[in-house]
Length: 184
Image 1 (cartoon, helix red, strand yellow):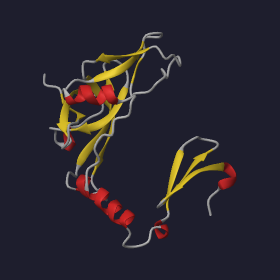
Image 2: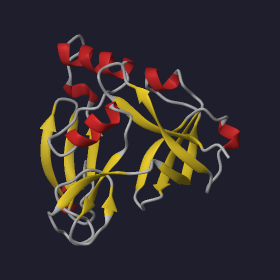
Image 3: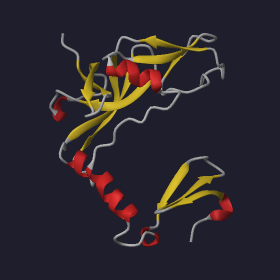
């Protein structure tokens, strides 16, 4: 049923098989609905999760990012060896593979690199917000981040539009960086 001759099965967990393509190294998830008995606690939890907006789960690597976001500051990593800024948090620089990294506060200003308007979502917490803009923002410092564009009608968003970071409470102690149009 699945092309396992070109893939490596990594795990089987409840409703999903996870495998890694040997050619692209992309993780693929395959839903196996009949593997979860109806009425099971796992199935009930899956329904609950579909009705809740996901909240950040900081890892040891991303802990600083989320702590600073909770203080309404945008911090990303910078390599001390090659001076590259990068985002998402990781243990090695994606430019030079160095591990001499530090966290740096950045301006929070950037431009819309690309975007899409989401008109429909199967997940209840996101469906309530449609339509909304999901964008890739290129920060002044260079890295790109994926976030929503808020406080702006969806038909006014444009590629190249200047934006600045704002922080949206998530319902727990975290705040989620989002972007809004820059004034002036």
